[in-house]
Image (cartoon, rainbow, N blue to C red):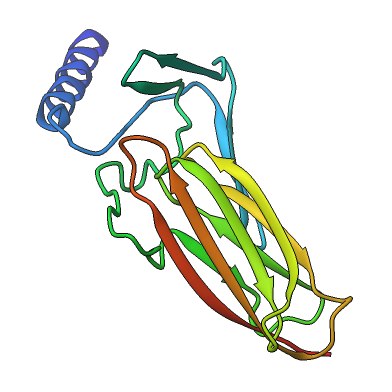
Length: 177
């Protein structure tokens, strides 16, 4: 009887796998891991794999390959915004209005030199920063406590690497006491 139940169980598992083996979404069975949320931050972790990023370059081609189960943007692997302005899923600025800090989440898949400047209402640059975007996200935080309560304007520019799309965006930030 036990042997028959085992065979039925294994056959059922085989049928389930055969029915779902043709899928488009990324799926992995991992031995252990979890996801932890704290406010707006989410940390995914697992045990038993090595984080590895390889960059290969030839005269006309730059390829970055990442290995492992945890990959950026795996919820929408085929979506890339090739417009020349940032979409709402690529740049997130919050909290707005702000009193102590503003966080900028860069989630674009495009690669290149990213620069952003914060202007006051008179057009004076009060803050600026540059970094290289590898196409898998970054979070920047601006301390707003040192400036007066007013409207500020954030201008973000992506100067793309070859094969990627340049982008621009402007965002109004309201600073409260």
